[in-house]
Image (cartoon, rainbow, N blue to C red):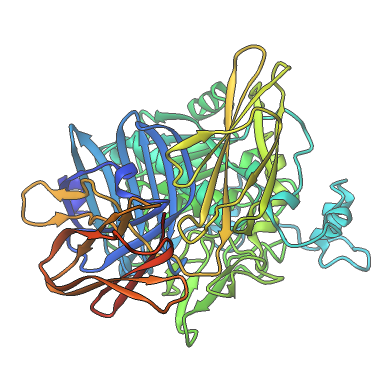
Length: 616
C-alpha cells in the first residue's frame, strides 16, 4: 500500500468491498458512485464477454463517449479501470471481499509523456540496434498519396484493391489476414521486481492491459482480427531499471532470457512493465519524464525485432492508457506531431466536443503535455464522438493497424486449432430482422453451432443451432438498446470456442441509465459508501390489477408518480409527496382501469423518468 500511495499520480488508495456487477448493472446500463468523487458515474456496455458469474469481461463507455470502464472478473476476482474526464481509478482484488481502490490525479496524467520521440533517435540511432531512416524515398507512381503507399503496393499487398473497398473502416470491411489459421496477436508481458512490489496484482494488471487494448480496437471500429491475447506473464529476474528508459529498452530486448521466453510462448509482441523511480522514469516525480517507450515501425510490414515496449506499471491502465499507447507504436502508429514519420496518415488526432466545441479530446496515440482528455480510441475519420470525427485523412491509426496486424500476428507462429467469428447486422432499427453468419475454421469438422442472445450481456437465452441466425431486434427498444449475441462452436474433437457481438438498436428515443438492487462499493472503514441505488422499475409488466413502482431517491425531496394512457390524455395519480433519501416501493391498485398501453412517469426534482407498461 505504501509503495502505491507514494507514486506521483496517486491521490488515494483505500480498501473497499465490491458487489456483483451482474447485479449492479441493468440491461447493460450501469450507474454508481465512487468514494471521494461527488459525481455519479453513468455508463453502458459496449461489449460483454460472459462465461459464468466468476469469469467475464464488461467493457463500457460513459454517456458522453469520452469516459471508459474496463471491468473484468477471473475466477471470482474483480479488477477494473475507470477512466473519466476528471478522474481515474483502478480496482484490484486483495483477499476475501477486500479490494483496493486507487485514485489518480487526472491533471498530472495529462502532462506525462511517451519516450518514443521523433524517429526514435533516442533509442535506435543512439544505440545502433536498428537501422537509421533512409535519406531519400524511392520515386513513386502517380495516384499514390506518398512514397510509403507506393512501397506498400510494390511489396504485393494490393493497396489499390483495399482503397477501392466500399464504405468506411467498419469491422466487416477490414482486410482479412493473408495466412489462415494463425493465432491472434499474442503479447508476452514481463515485469521487474520493482513493478511487482508496487502493483496489487500483476496477474490482474496484465488482464486489464489486454482487455483495454482490445477495447480501444472495438471503440475505433477496427477489425477484431487485430485483437490481442496474453501469451504469458513472467518475472524478468535479475533485471533492474536504470535512470534512463531509453537505455533499458534495447538492453532488455537483447537479453537471451527474453528471446527464450518469447519463443517458448510464441509471442508476437513483448512488453516489460517497470517501476523506475529515478532519471527519466515517471516515478521520480519529475515533470519531464516518460511513462513508456517503444520501437515504432515505418516499414509497410513491421519487423519482429521492433516488437518491444516498456510501460510503467502504475500508468499502464489509468487515464494515460500507456500500455495501449506503446503497443500502438509497435503496430506502426505515431504521435500527432510526428510530422516526418511514415506513413503520413498513421498519426494520433486531437478533436473537440461539447456544445461550443470547447472540450479538448485526444486519441490514444497523441503525445502527452497537450492538456485535454485522452480517450481510449485510435484515430479514425469514420468514427465520431458527439458528432465529431476522431481522425482525418492524415490522422488514421485505424488504417495503419488494419494494414499491419496480419504481419504482426505472424512474428511468431503458435497455431491455434479452432477459430470462430460472427459477421452480420451490427446496427439496426427496433423490431426489424437482423441476420448473422457464424464462421468456424482451422478445427476438426463437422462443427456444431449454438447461438444465444441476451439483453444485458449476462443472462443468455439459447436460440438456434445452425451457422445462419436470424432474430428480430429488440422490440420495444426503449427497454433494451443493445442486443448481445454469443456463438459457441464445437468441433468434432470437442474443442469449443466462443465469439461475441454487440448489436446497437435504434429506438428513436433517449435511454436512461438504471441499476438494480444489489451491493455496490462500501469502504471498509465505514466512513463512506459506494452505493448502488435500486432502479426506476415498474412490475409486473404486463400487469392486471396492480403494479409496483420501485425507485431510488438520491436526497430528500418531492416525488410524483403518474400513469398516462397511450394517447397522453387520461392521467392517473399513483403517488405524490415528499420522501427521504433511499430506496422506495409504491403499490398502485389498477382494478377498473381500462386495458391498454400506459406510461408510468416519475418526477423527482428536475428529472423525469418514463416507463411503458401494458395493462391486460
